[in-house]
Image (cartoon, rainbow over all chains, first blue to last red; front, side):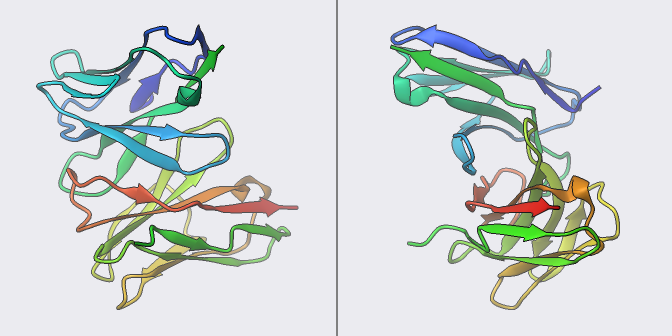
Length: 111
Length: 114
């Protein structure tokens, strides 16, 4: 079983749609969680950290469910510029900088 | 302010050669991590360095090595290159490499092995 699992998609949605991505992680002791965005042939860029209380940044909302070991990302009012691969990321247990990435979920927003 | 910078941007090598990739972290960041990303997959952790000491190592063979310099820049070395080493190599920096501190990535070095 992979440490971080995501549905690779692709998700094809029209502009203005709401889309949700899910991610599960295997190590219940994991403590830090992130969503990164990666455009084609570019580097990953931090989209947002994910906290137990949930957090929102504009059109983006991230949720963490520790009991189910489940992380989600909700994008409202999708824009063409949201088209990218979204990477679910978990930090290795212990206070280290090892990031464990999911495979990524590809989003294509169409006009 | 400059972000994480990596060099070279592209590199073509043949099997059996060796390669050195370079990374300069964001100013003030003391931790550097290296990742390998093959097409269609998420990045895989190779090494983390903090204050010139190796803090973590991923599941990569001994052909992969790295070091960090007093100015916090870093090099990744790969010996005896194999076709399977073709990938995007990413460097990321963070303040102190702690779990809660976000990591910021450079543009990467795209390595192709012929």
